Length: 292
Length: 246
Ligand code: SF4
Ligand code: SF4
Ligand code: SF4
Image (cartoon, rainbow over all chains, first blue to last red; front, side, top):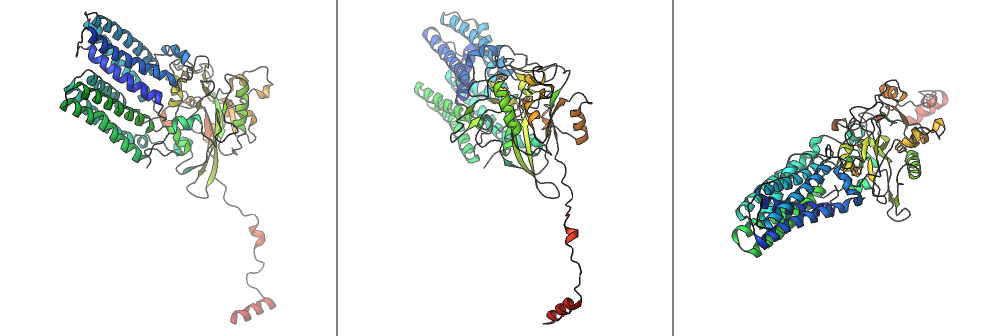
């Protein structure tokens, strides 16, 4: 799938923001006064920035309000509701916190809705059967763990952050390995895609140039390139922040840890899209599974 | 509404005969021609005379080489447009309700006035049957020429999809696949029409008819070219034998 910068930025930023809002909501940190304004402000700001950037990939963003209507079937619609609910609850909770009288129940509601929003985002991808690499419980699990990991770094929960990051890293490696076999496990080939049997080779494409389909869904990334990026993602998102948080207890180190983490998540999200094989690739002779 | 109807009264769709499609792309052009001028936003082209032309199409024709168990390889042309699936995953993912499946005839449509162009339905379709138009910013897909098949302003024989009407080899057929007595259904039954990627659970309405196996190779000229005499005789035979001794 095409790794669109707006969508990658969206889930990275909003994941960080919602993660921090979760830690604030459950009361893991309880800043007061100006510090409260700063923490809640950063959480809300990141979440909103992410959501705004997600509208850049819409063809008709002025109609975005319509996406609230189909929550019965569509995870994207559910995400829209969850996001608005989360931002409302988190803003109200922030207000009470800044005023010096935080309402714990409101905080818990805010935390739950923030996690629900991230879950909905992940389910948009996980519900797509035509992309077997995504169509699995590991998709929401990794999104949620990375969100909590980022939140823990922002909330300066050093030990907790380190533990979540390690867990997320382990799950991520397992997810990559499972994902590498997912397309083959789906059992679809150009033979089943065309119904023409076991030995089918594309002879001519239907169009000499590119198309929406080839841009959007027949994106391929080489195995060596992907392996290198996986390593970079793990180093930046897990190894570097863990060491910095545990061994260099200072604000500056915390900031560097956060930047490393964000860069690592950007790499992870880029791979999330770039490595995902869509069944439509079969019609274009894109092999299932990883290319060399 | 993105809830799929519990059932449809009719299941209108196409039957595409891979045996006789000659890969002329006439249906591609007819489809683009009709849908550029009628229903919804036109299908835009980008850089049409430049180095990297591309455009939006609702129907495209691939070509494949198929090697059967026995015999020579075959070239098969493979037209692909929306299959108007019974369990259309493209419909349920739509956040706005722009994607819908009609209860009366099963046609899967996009209400372009409500579409936000998020592209999610195109991801959800396993077949690549939807393309977002870069100029209009909305999702385009085969409408089954809904503005032809019910159009009283057209002569009766034109009340079928443009691609079906134009196909010079009659490789595309239109009909009600839910009615076992329709010509389309009978053709599917007789020729063992099949679904694309049935395991994905989309239950396509459109059916494909397989290429027929190639006939046994019959060489019509061979019997006429048989040598008149196996062994030369007479003077020629004597000469042949003498030469053979040398
Ligand atoms: S072919 Fe694709 S676009 Fe058409 S109904 Fe089926 S899933 Fe939807
Ligand atoms: S692109 Fe339009 S039709 Fe497709 S899912 Fe988004 S809003 Fe619905
Ligand atoms: S039925 Fe109409 S819209 Fe669909 S492929 Fe044929 S010509 Fe195009």
